[in-house]
Length: 195
Image (cartoon, rainbow, N blue to C red; front, side, top):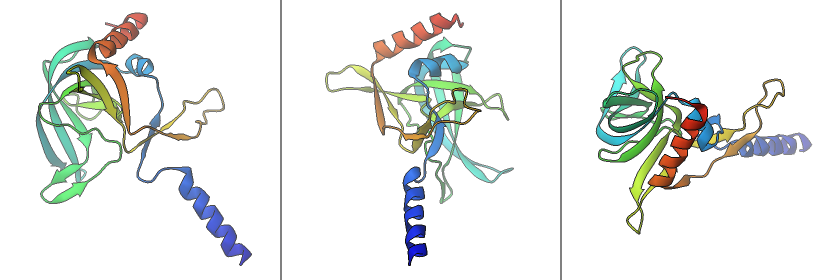
């Protein structure tokens, strides 16, 4: 009896220690994300396409981005962002915390060239690397990050490379008006002296 009770308590504690179906990324402030990202852009989502990678057998979503403004790094006027997951030919693959793209949506993206194909780009922090631009009730453009499926781990602080415990993130992070977000990005870029 004592053994089964102990097992039940241990199982319950393990199940409470991390959210189910979450991708874990390092927690950074917005300014740190700007600093650590090679390319930061503002644009609009064009076509969204889902394909299967024949070599790996996994499904990926490809979002065409029409770039309006580049805040950091160099980016073509039209680029394609690849995210894991999607639905293809009746088969669905879901990756917790992956960014979702909707045609016509305004976005600010924190991206880098894909390691296996430099003609494609990937978010540096899954959904945390995408700011959705939407109009609020007063008609102002505001930025929100939809972080469902993500949990965050604090960066290690000289403790032998061990990261701090997992911190569940908010489902939606309100970042303020578009003007405020752009000012924060420009200030972070200027502070580093990045192009």
